[in-house]
Image (cartoon, rainbow, N blue to C red; front, side, top):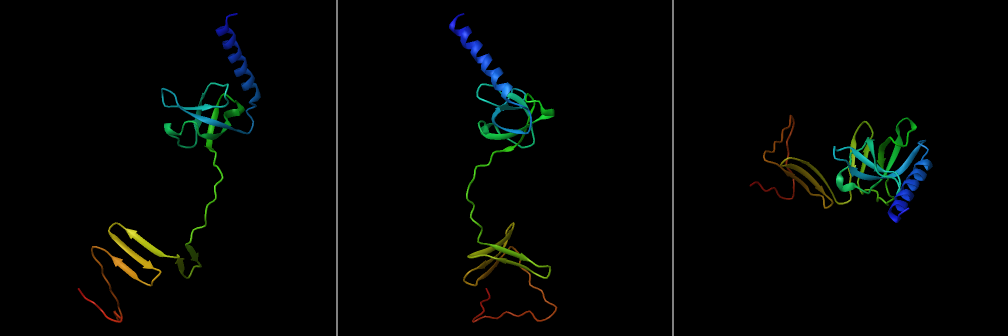
Length: 157
């Protein structure tokens, strides 16, 4: 046998050995290998196994090729993987400084520095210093009772 034929035979045997280790039961960690010419997902189940077509329950982009994914197998057949998610790497997530309490009577949203409500050009900002900033293209204040403006001084225009 020539060297190239021997290498080819070894590659085929390695592929067969790799497939034989896949039971098709449960789930496996694989690598997203991109898309084929028709836009179908490709999955690499092992280093010695050529990528195979797969179904997917998650969206993936070509730029994510090489990403670790979790696959299940349709009808337990390793040649028919279904991508069911991405492998998430542990990372410490700090708890947000904001707190929200809802008790049926009231909603309390509390933050350390400021709270902003925004919609289009309108906003309401509450700051730690006690400022309430209301901005909008049109601001209306209505009251069935007294509508009072109080402060150390009141500036109009």
